[in-house]
Image 1: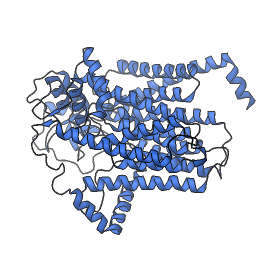
Image 2: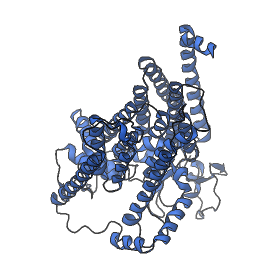
Image 3: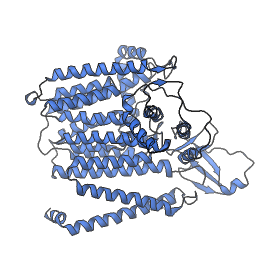
Image 4: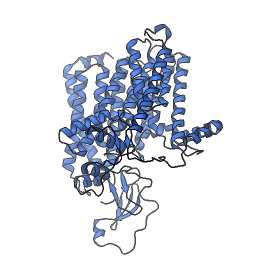
Length: 575
C-alpha cells in the first residue's frame, strides 16, 4: 500500500489523473448521447445531435469540475457530502418534470398562495393564468393506469392513410420496429400519457409546448384541499424570491423545489456532523434516488426525511448534554407537526441513551414527557388553524368516499388481529418487501427497473462499509434497533390501512417505499453492528466514508440519468 500513498503525495500524478478523469467523463457523455440517438431514434424525431451532445458534455464536465473542486477545498466529510447531496438533488430537480412527484400540485399551489402573503384558505380564490397554465400543462401521472401499445403509421403512411381501422396488437415490441410504413410501440415504463380512452398519446415535451404556447386558459385553477402552512415555508420563500426576480410560474416552480432541497441538504449536513461513526449507511440512505427524488420536490417529505436522518443519529448517541436534548426536541416537534402520531415512535430513541453518560439537566423521562406534550399541543394547534381559517369550502366529504371509514377500520383491526397480521404479511410479500420498489417514481408510478434492482445493494454496501473495527455490538442493542424498525414498519402500514384502505380489504392501499426509509436506515445500522462480530474492514474509517460517498453519489447521478431518459428521451408514439 506504500505505492498508493506515494501516488497520493505526488502532485504531478494528481493533476494528470484529474485531467484524464475529465476526458474520460466527456467520452462517456458522447457515448451516452450516441446511445440515445441509436436506441431512441433521436435523429428520426428531429433532435439535433450536436446541440444535445454539447449540452450533455457541458453538464457532465461542470459536475466533474465541481466535484474535484469540492474534494480539493473541503477535507471533512459532512461538507463534501452536503455538496454532493445538493448537486445530485439539483440534477433530479430538473430531470423530474413539473408536478410529477406525489401530491406535488397541491403542495405547489399552497406554496404559491403563501408566497403572495396569504395564509388563509379560501375556496373562492383562483390562481393566475400563468399558474393555471402550468398546472393544466402537466396534469401528473404520465404513466397512468394503463400502458399504451399498438401500431401507428410512420410519416410516409400518414400521407396516404389506410381505410381500415388500426387494430391494437397483443404483443407489441418494447422498442420500435418499423416496416411497410407502420410501427409498433409500447409505452411501458416511459413517460407517456393518453388523455381519455381514445385520446392522443402525449409526452412531457407536449406539456412544455402547451405551457410556452401561451394559449388562453379556459378555466382558472382553484384552491386545493390543503390546509397546512408550516411545511411550505421554505418553498413559499423560494417562490417569493423568484417572483421578485421576475420569473414566471415555471421558473418559480423550480425555485421552490431548490428551496426544499436546500433544507434537506442542511438537515443531512447536521446529521453527518453529529455522527462519529456509521456514516456510510447514512450516506447511502441520504443519496438514495428515492430520497433525492422527494427532496427535490414540493412534497413535505423532503423536510420529514431530513428530520428522520437527524433523529436516527440519536440512536448512536453515547453522551447526552443539554444541546443534544434541545436538538432532539426541535427535530421531534418538526416531524410531528408535519406528520403527527406515527412519529411519536421516535421517543424510543431515549430508551437507547446510556444512563451513565447522561449529562443533561432533564432526565430522559422528563424529555419524553415534554416532547409528547409539545407534539400533542402543536398538532392540535395546526388542526385548529386549518379548521378555523378556511372559508367557502362547505362540507368536505371523505377523500376516498364512504368505503374508507377510519373508525370502522380501526374496530376491524382490533377485532381481527390475526387476519390483520396476514394482511400485513401479504402486502409486504406482494411488494417485494418494498426493497424492490426504491426505483418507483411518479405520481402514479414510473418504475425504473435498474434503480429498483441496484438500490438494495447500495444500502447493503453502506451497511458493510459502516462495520466498526471494534466489536462494539451489544446483542440487546442490535435487537432493540431491529425491533424498533419492525414496529415502525407495522405502524406505517397500519396508518395507511386505517386512513386510506376500504374496511376489511385484504391488502394495504397507497403504501410506498419512501415511507420505510427510516426502517431501512435503522436496520442498516443494526446490520453493521452485527457484522462487526464476523467481518473486519481493513480500510480506515475515512477511506470507507470516501468510498461510500463516491459510490452512492455515482449511483445517484446514474439513476438521475435513467430518470431523465425515461421522461425526456424515451419512446414517443411517432417517429
